[in-house]
Image (cartoon, rainbow, N blue to C red; front, side):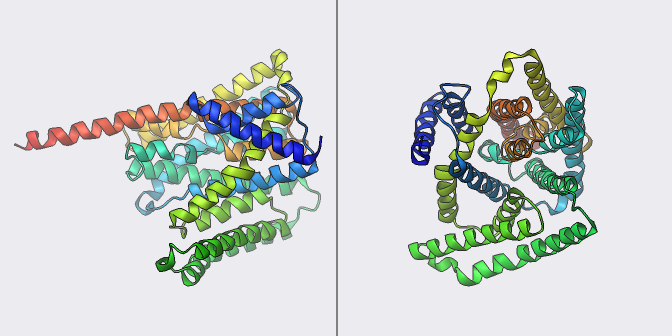
Amino acid sequence: MSTLSSFFIILLVAVVFSQLFSRMKVPWVVALIAGGIIIGPSGFGIFKTDPTIDFLATIGLVLLMFMAGVESRASGIGGIKKRIIFTGLFIGFFPALVGGLIILSFGYSWPAAILMSIIFMSSAIAALIPQLQANKIIGSDLGKTIIGATVAIDALSLIFLSIFLQALTADFSPLNLMSYILIIVLVVLAAIVIPRIRKFFFSEEYAEKQDLFEKELRFVMLVLIGFVVLFELVGLHAIIAAFFAGLILSKSMESRLLKAKLHTMGYGFLIPVFFVVIGATTDFSVFSEGFATLLVLSIIIGLVGSKFIGGWIAGRLGNFNNRESALLGAASIPQLSTSLAVAFLGFGEGLLDQEILAAIVVLTIATVTIAPIIVNKLSHDLASQQVTVQEKSPSEKS
């Protein structure tokens, strides 16, 4: 099968399955992964990857992490930094410990356990932002705590991933530590300088001019590729660079049209390639064995339980009520960009096997399907509760 034929099949699956599953209210990501499973070796076996498709999938992964950074903007958290740090410890490090212990109990190596800890540490808050916005939770202290803590832990998990991958190489030395310091300095400088450069060259008064948006889009892509190249020069993976580039640019990208173009270019073209390839390259025949089924059940129960319990404890200790604490825990459950990126990377490096890769794919499907339903219910109840309190207050005063 030619590369063009393979690419056509991917686009066909992306279009057909996303439409079919949307009618059943199934998340878009689940539709693409399911489509990949059906055309891959676990299904009809009509699709095989090649170096070109793998390259496109890698570009899609980089764009996915970039958009995760753009959509994970955390602002207005100055007054609750201590609460965010405290919450991050419970929704990040407690699940990481649970994830590592689960993998070790199944007889896997320490490198596999560390990668699983990184996966358990991460969260995909971008998948829940629509529900939080619709129920007016996003601007409250609870909403700021949820977003601030999950974004911070997600970023920290990628930093741990980069340190771990470099520690595995034989050339790891104190020089690597200096490169990290240099990267941190450059990222801080970029966070200060890039928004000013963008504001200088792309004035908002010309926001409706098409040529301006084309130039601004090229500027964004220049920053993204520049970050990737810079990070790779010091041995850091492209997905880490992409996430931080998105996080930095998110503070300066106020234009809805620009974000819409980036979203269209990423989610409409290259990101679907990554999700379909993930489904197609995952061998789900491993679930014919009891070991793999027990593994995936342990991983799902372990992650959901540790995230929810950790978030609830953090909420109660942070003076939130039971329902708010439950929402905090539920909001940290979804796994998407970082989890799939780490699993895909670990499998490619030979650190994770097909059983774990399949388990992470199932975990992603389960959490991005279930968590939004739970969060929507809890946030809707909280919004209704606030409205009731506001309606009662005038009569109480009288």
